[in-house]
Amino acid sequence: MPTSEPQTRRARSLMERHPRQLIVPVALLLSTLLLLLGLSLPLMDAQTGILWTRWKSSYSVWAGVVALWHSGEYALAAVVFFFSIAFPLAKLLALAVLWLVRLGEHQRETILRWLELLGKWSMLDVFAVAILIVLVKLGPLANIQPRVGVYYFTAAIVASMLTTMYVTHIAHTHHH
Image 1 (tube, rainbow, N blue to C red):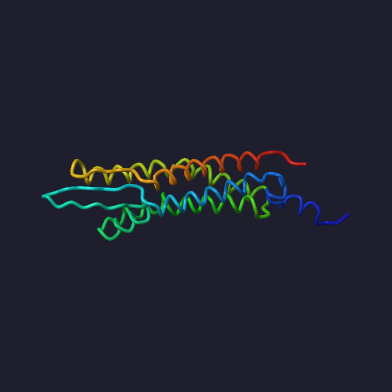
Image 2: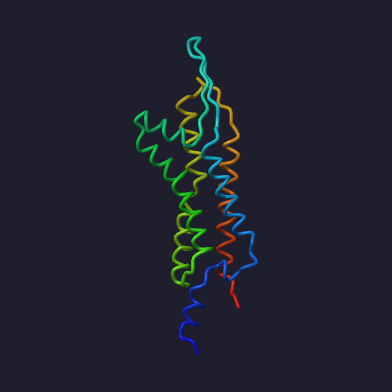
């Protein structure tokens, strides 16, 4: 009897344990694509007409973080960057690791607990707060119109949450 058999059985990837679950790689790819589009496409148009001078700007998440940084709002820029850009990308990377990499059950459970803990800090909440900050700063002086990036970003959040729930379910499913 080969001595590596128990080790191999313990260190299988979720993809190896569930080879017919093609929805996971598709969901990971879709979530990543939606997130990248949501981060780069304009979220909103802001238009104002103060003292007969009219201006119109479009803002994406990334452009908003850069604008906050350049205006000296470093803490706010860091919060929006972390929760709206870094965390969602890290979450998708962790899901890909869970799916593709051979992990022991303890390692897999550690990553799942980490994802569950961080998932409670919804990026949607921080995103909404960031939008509210912009609206409050502009107040009645500007007309804000949502753009396509809002919908892609929201879809990315939902897709990522559903993918996380599904991968967690698969990870806890007994295998033969």
